[in-house]
Structures are given as C-alpha cells and as structure tokens.
Length: 101
Image 1: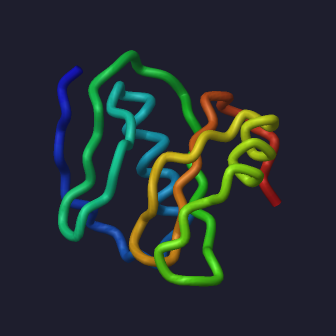
Image 2 (image 1 turned 30 degrees about the vertical axis):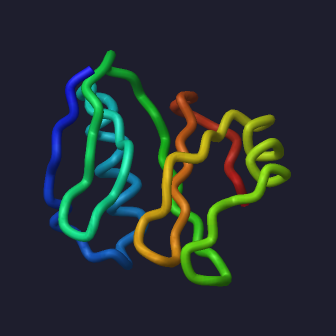
C-alpha cells in the first residue's frame, strides 16, 4: 500500500478539528498511520467512514497499556499512535461508534 505524507494545518489543540480532518481523509481512502514533527503519514486503502478520537494523557509519551487496548477494543476502538507528547489517537471503523467517554 502506498503512503502519503501531508502537513497538518491545524492547531495541535483543535482536537475536534483534527478528528474531523482525519475522518474526512479516511472517507477519501487515506487512513492515518503516524504523526511526525512536521508531517502526518496516511496509508492509501479502501475509502471508509472511520471515527478518530484524540485522548489526552496524564504523562508525556505514554503508550496505552494492554488492559486499556483490550477494553477500548471491545467497543471497536483501535490504537493508532501518539500525536505529539500528550495525545493518543484511536480509530473506530464504525461511523457511529460507542464513545470512549
């Protein structure tokens, strides 16, 4: 699968804007995979309506533990990556998912 890199022209604190942007890209067939200091990586695939959520963490660079991954997985959420030092990115392929909180 082909990877496409894009700059994100949104504030890192505009969480709903970032979530909406990632969902829109997924609907066009570009699925968010990782975030770097400047560029976001998207993997080309089948277009699908996905929901993304950014979750604030208590500490810097905290990956979710297995218990959290399993719990969120039961509700259809899959961990993608860290977004900056304080946010975890989660994706649900259900366009109307059970909300995390």
